[in-house]
Amino acid sequence: MKFDGIVIGGGPAGMFAAITAAKNGSRVLLLEKNSRLGKKLLITGKGRCNVTNNCSAQEVLQNTPRNGRFLFSAMAAFPPEKTISFFETNGCPLKTERGNRVFPQSDCAFDVSGALRRRCERLGVRWVRDRAVSVETAEGRVCGVAGEKETYPAEAVILATGGVSYPGTGSTGDGYRMAAALGHGIVPPCGSLVPLVSDDGDCRRMQGLALKNVELTALNGKNKVQFRDFGELLFTHFGVSGPLVLSASAHLRHWDREKYRLCIDLKPALDRDKLEARILRDLGENPNRDFEKIVAGLVPHSMVPVLLDRLEVPAGLKANSVTRQQRRALEELLKCFSVSVTGPRPVAEAIVTSGGVQVSQVQPSTMESKLAPGLYFAGEILDVDAYTGGFNLQIAWSTGHLAGTSAAGAEGE
Image 1 (spheres, rainbow, N blue to C red):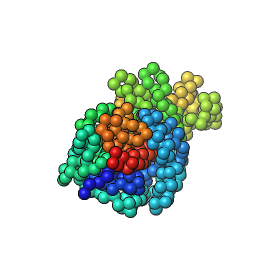
Image 2: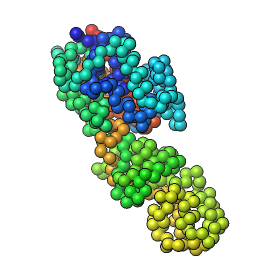
Image 3: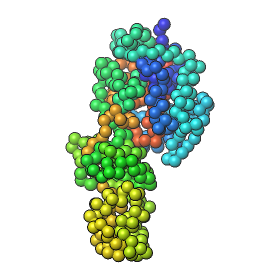
Image 4: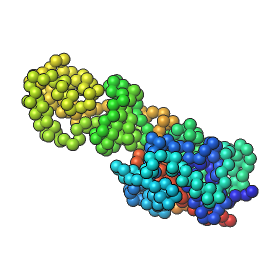
């Protein structure tokens, strides 16, 4: 059987591309090497699946530091409001939480993948479990896909194989190889939205400690701000992680020639004058109390010995013996707890892959390759990535929608 279109990859972008192409009248084959569709979706948002962000299309682009302008047409055609409408009308009611993050009301990622699978079935998308080996061409145009089991003829092919993060879900870089074989340049993949490694032993001392409502500033070697935001982070045995760190990592790309450090404001709600007044009050009201107890009233328990070591105060120091210099040092440490970082964790641990097919070789208004007519791209295989908060999945839905629409319209050209 000859199909109008073949989608390689049964992740979010692939399933959405298949749905859109089929809705536009195409006979669609979906090739996926895993035993189930949407495997990576099931681990997003800690199993809850942050479907999108309840914001405008423009705000998605503003939260896409890597080639955001390339997505203008895709996002305009299918903004977050349409994503929300799709899932709401396909049996997956949603809710909006802090930061405009959108989740299924059930807090279960299975409901998201289930809605996509059911829609594929209703539209007659045929799913075959096979690993695509190459995209076939004839007379300069795509003509099908060679799989490990057989060859599948088609007039259009959509590559939606993802990046190389979480390889256990099937993201092993097959799409890069197939795209490169057709002449596409591949920006070397690296981790984006990835935890960061530190050589600071204090991170290991505090592993497991989650800090909430802090401000994180990432600085380069010249103390130039690379990133700043407010939220949560986590100390680990290797360094730091958590939402703030993952977002910061998207801005720290030049590890080969830059040195970065993180400055954590532990008291962002207090300016320096108010913080000074708070500490003076605590010291004055408890003059015979150990300084350690004063510090314990300002930071989480597991941070106390770390702060005392950094301040180099003697054991048993009483509040009434704290010098002005020691008090000022505490104020400075609370407003900028510094952590040096030496690099990202392996790309396999990243939530999103940065790098991929060069967007200059893809038509942004259609997602079609400029080098291989009939070949389209969707999702993480493209050199586009955004911050955490549902933006990367929105990119998957939008590029999948545009690629599916375009591939369906390409029939017979």
